[in-house]
Length: 485
Image (cartoon, rainbow, N blue to C red; front, side, top):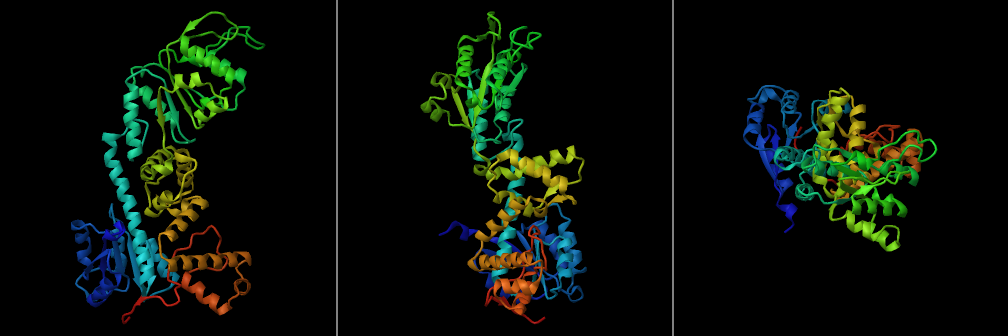
C-alpha cells in the first residue's frame, strides 16, 4: 500500500448543518478524518484539546440560529490570532471578489464558492496540510538546536548530523582537512567551526582565497616579502601563513592555485617553514591547514593540473558538504534564522514566515545553496510591507516554481485548469487586457472567455508577476456538493 494513503488529515468542519457534514465526510473518502462542530463557542476549546490540521469554515453560518455567539469573521479572527493556528479554508455563497479579499485579510488561506467542487476542495486541503507539515518541521528543528548543533552552523538533517560528528572528531587532532562542496554551501563556516573546537581556538584563524588574483600576488599574500623584494616593496610584510602561526589557515578554492604555487605550498607543509619573497631566511611556522574547493581534484590530478603529492598532504581528512537541495529539511530552519538576523540588522518589524512562503522555499532547487537562500530572505524582508514574509515577497522565479510544484502534486484536472489559467493570462497580457483580441488569440468566443475569467478570478490586464489565487474549478463536469442555500 502507498504510504501516502495511510496519512489521515484531520479536518475540523465548522457548520451548523449536520446533514452537510455527513455528506462531506462521505465524499472526502479515505485519508481525511472529519470532525464536525456546529457551535462557534466550541471551536477554540476544541483546538486546545485536539490537534487539527485544517479548519473548514462555513462563511454563511448564522450565529443567531446556533448556541454560539459571534460571526464567522469574529471566529476567523480569533483563530488567526492564536500562536499556532491551523490554516482556515472558508466557503460560502457570496462570490464577490470583495468578500474573498476580506476573508483573506482576516487570515483564511482559501475561499471557495458554493456549491463546493470536491476536486478543488481536496487539492486545497492537501496543499494546506503540506504547509502545516513544513511549519511543524520548523518547530521540531528549533527544539533540537540546543543539543545537536555546532556554533556557527545550522541544520538538523541527517546529512548535517554526520557533518557535526566529523567536525568534532577532526577538531580533536591537528591534521590537515579538505572540504569539498558547491559554492555557497558554507565551507568556510565548517573550517571556522573546526578551529573553534580545537586546541588552537585562542590562536588566529586566517582565511584566504586565491580567486582572480595573479600568481605573483598570491605568493606574496601567502608567504610575505622583504623590503626591496620588488618594485614598490618599501617595507617588509608578513604573509598569511605567518599571521596564522599557532592557529589555523583556511585556503579556499585550493584548486585555483597554479602548479608552481602548489610546489611552494607543498614545501611549506613538508618543512613547516617558509621564506619570504626576496629573502633566504627560513621562518618556522606552526599552522593547521584547512583547504576547500568546489572542483574535482582527483580529476585534476589525472589531467596533470593538480599535484598528487600535495593532494594527499592536504586531504588527510575529507569532508563533503551536501548542497542545500539534498538537505531540504533544513531550509525552514535556515530561513527562520536569517529572518531574525536581517530583521534586527535592518530594524524591520517582520517576525514570521507564512506557510505559503515556506512551501515556496521547499519547492526551489537552490543552485546557489545557503548563500542564495540568505540573499533571498534579505531581499524579501527589505521589500516586505507587513509583519510576515509571504509568497508575494519572493522573487518571481521562485514563486513560479512553487506554483508548478503544487501542480505536479495535484490531479490531472487541476493541472489542466492551471494551464488554462496561464494561457488566458498570457493572452490578456499580450493584448493589453483587450478581451476581444485575447479571445481571438485563444480561438474561443468572447462570452466563453468572460465566463472563464469569472470562474478563475483573472482580471483584465493582470500583470504576469501578480500571483493569482487558485479558486474555483474548470473541470467540464466537476463533482460538487449541493445543498439548499
